[in-house]
Amino acid sequence: MGSFKVYVSMVSIFVLIAMLNSSSSYRYSSRYGSRSRYNYQPSLRKCLSNDILSTLQGTLCPRANPCKNGGTEQPSGRCVCTDEYTGPTCEEKVNPCKNGGIDLPSVGCVCTFDFTGSTCEERVNPCQNNGTLLSDGSCNCTVDFTGTLCEERVNPCQNNGTLLSDGSCNCTVDFTGTLCEERVNPCQNNGTLLPDGSCNCTVEFIGTLCEGRANPCQNNGTLLSDGSCNCTESFGGNSCGEARCENINYQECRSECGPDYIQVDSYCDGDDVCCN
Image 1: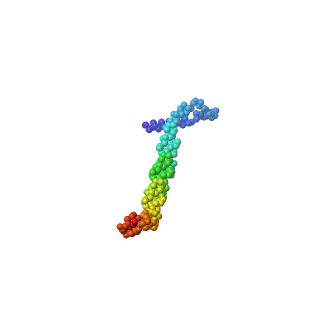
Image 2 (image 1 turned 90 degrees about the vertical axis):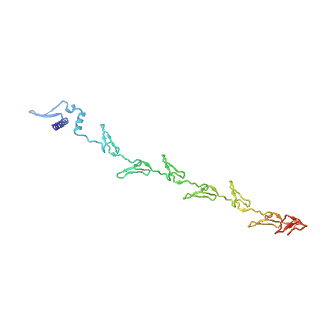
Image 3 (image 1 turned 120 degrees about the horizontal axis):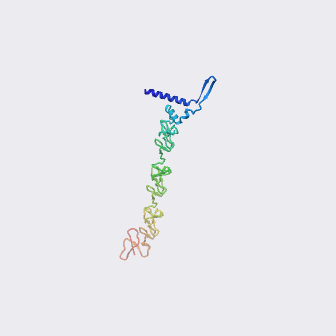
């Protein structure tokens, strides 16, 4: 019985909608011929509000949801989309790829050269040699490197030394040391390099670089290659500092001075002594 009532109600509603959609005029026939007669009373459609009519039609024939891809239609007609879609009717898939990345089916995000990550969310670090990328796009380099991208090794070599590929320094001729920090001593024969660049030589050497041996031979004596002195005829001794005995009046060289002579300090060859 209940099903029958529902069926009758459904039929009644269909009839009502048909009446609402039909014209309010009709024709009739008489012996005077066929004539049209108009119902000047307000039609049933006008008596019912549009809201009631819309409700009846919506109940029997629900309107299709214009919101696609799982979107929900609001009473205002606006679509509320899921997180994956956007657009007036949720027809457009949201691009999960950030920073200009392209979403390819079965591939995922194809990022630009400047970004990486599953959604291109991470900026590629262009800074080389462990440099840090700053927020302004510049590189903060470690102490060992310099340059826009930290691509250039800092030259630790001092005094115009050249940094080699193995990290060692090739120094100029004037400097030495691991970092070319030490000036090469140009002073020869144990001479000392002074702060002003000059040489302080030992007593045995002379010259700008202490390259010449100092002449210990006095009184115009000549220094020989073996370090001994070749004295003139008037002088003798290791340094030609002693006058020759024979060149002084009343002096002569003897193997020993007799009782009539006094030994004086003048030079004689060999083991002879100078007697006066």
